[in-house]
Amino acid sequence: MIVHYVAVLLLVGVALPASCLAHSTMTKNLKVLVSSNDFPASGLKVLEEHFTVLQTKYLNFGEEGRTLAKEDLLKLIPGCSALVWSSNLPISKELLDRAGPQLKLVATVSAGYNHCNLDELRARGIKLSNTPNVLSSAVAEIAVGLMLGAARRFTENLEQVHKGEWEIGFDKVLGQDIRGSTVGIVGLGGIGQAVVKRLAGFEVDKFIYSGHREKPEGKALGAEFVTQDQLLERSDFIVLAVPLTNETRHMINKDTLAKMKSNAILINIGRGDLVDQDALYDALKNKQIYGAGLDVTTPEPLPKDHKLLTLPNLFVLPHIGSATVRTRSDMGVLAANNVVNALTGKALITPVNL
Ligand code: NAP
Image (cartoon, rainbow, N blue to C red):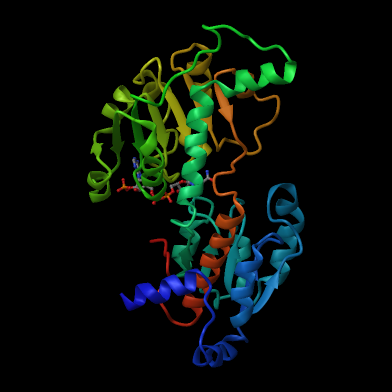
C-alpha cells in the first residue's frame, strides 16, 4: 500500500523531501540521455532534479530522426546510465554498442515496445520500461472516435462538406449504430478495458473479448471471453488493442477478414502491422466488410497517394492515440520516474518483462 502511495506521488511529480534531495546530489554524476527535442518539460524537470541530462537538439521522428538525431545521439550516448527513448524509430545495436556497459535502462515513452530491439536489450541485461495506463483513456477516446468516424461515414461526409455538395435526403449516407451492437475487443488490456468503459453510455448490446486467457477485469466489465474466431464471427465492431508481436503480426488477413460479418467495422489503434493492409483494401473495396477506422498504419505517414486513401469506407487518423497535452505530459513524467527508480536501486514502476 505504502509502495503504491509513493509510486502515485512519483507519478504525479510531487516534490521530494530533503533526505531524497541529498540522495539526488549523489546521482548528479549519472548521465541520462533524452532522445528527442520534444520530450515533455514536466518529465525533463524530474530528470534534471536527479541527474545530468543530455538531450539531442533534434526531433527523433521521421527523416530528422533517421539522420540528424541519429548522429547526435551516437555522439551523446557514451557513458550514459539511462536512455529515454522518445521516438517510434527502432533502437539500433550501434547506439547500444556506443553507450557502454554502464547503460542500465531504456525508458521508452510509449506503451508499445515493438521498436525497442528487445533481443539486444535482453542479451546485454539492460532493463526496459514503458508508459502504459496513463495513456489508456486518451487512446480509448480515439478508438471511440474511429468507431463513430467509420460507422457514420466521416470520410465521405467530410468530402461532401469540402466540395459543398451535400447529399441531402432521408435515405442518403446512412451509417450504422453503436446502439444494440456487439463490440469485440481483441486484447482486453489497459486500452481495451478503457474502450469498454468509455462506451458505457452507447447502449452496446454485448461486449466480447479475446486473448490468451480470461481476465477478472472482463467479468467486472460484463464482457464475455470468446475465441478469436468467435469474436470475428459475432462482432459488429472489432477493436484491435494488442501489442505487435510475432504472434499478432497480420492477425487480420484475408482469412480472418473472411470470417467477419458483412456489416463489420474494423478499428485498429494497436500497430499498423497487425493488419495485412492489402487484404484490408480488398475487403473494403469489395464491401466484404462495412468499414474500417485506423489510427495506425504501415508505413507512417501513409503516402497521400496510397491506395487505402482512395476508399470512401475507411477513416484514417495520423497516429494520434495518446496525443493530448495532459497524456503526453503524464507519459514524460512516468518515463522519468522509471529512470529515477532504476538508477536509485528501486523497482521500475512499469517494467517490460524481457
Ligand atoms: P496492455 O495493457 O499490455 O494490453 C494488451 C493486451 O493484449 C493484454 O491484455 C494481452 O493479454 C492482450 N494480447 C496479447 N496478445 C494477444 C493476442 N494474440 N490476442 C488477443 N489479445 C492479446 O497494453 P495497452 O496499454 O492496452 O496497449 C496495447 C497496444 O496498443 C500497445 O502495445 C501499443 O502497440 C498500442 N498503442 C497504440 C497507441 C496509439 O497511439 N495508437 C498508444 C498506446 C498504445 P493476454 O496476453 O492475456 O491475452
